[in-house]
Length: 143
Image (tube, rainbow, N blue to C red; front, side, top):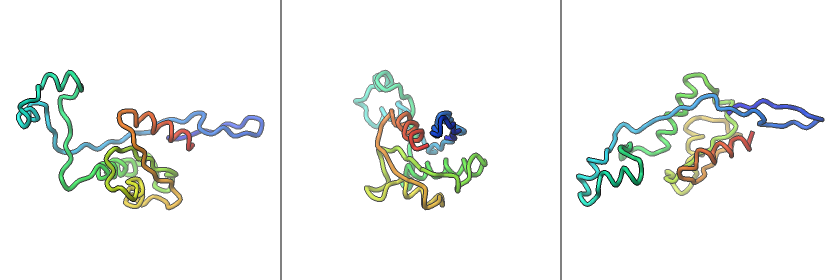
């Protein structure tokens, strides 16, 4: 997120015009569709799975890979494409329901792996589907 600041009667209003500059993503290489899942669990109804979840295929991470590995590769794309410099990152906010470890926070592991500044805030928060919206709100609040 980037922010422009406005001053009104000596008060600086931060984040008045926060915006998303770029989004990167990384998907696991392997996928599992409902038909394959139903072969492993014959009692499961493929149509019912889809009607209840809207999911026809899900990506499956390798056994030696973690969600933070995917996050690391997505962040590296941001840096490689020149959207942001490592020195410009003031906070790393990581939403997960599957942290790499209980401690330290996965965001702190990423901060180290990505060689972000030590003054950069790094923390995890736990949300499900609403995590993206909560993350945007947290990020804007920090700006």
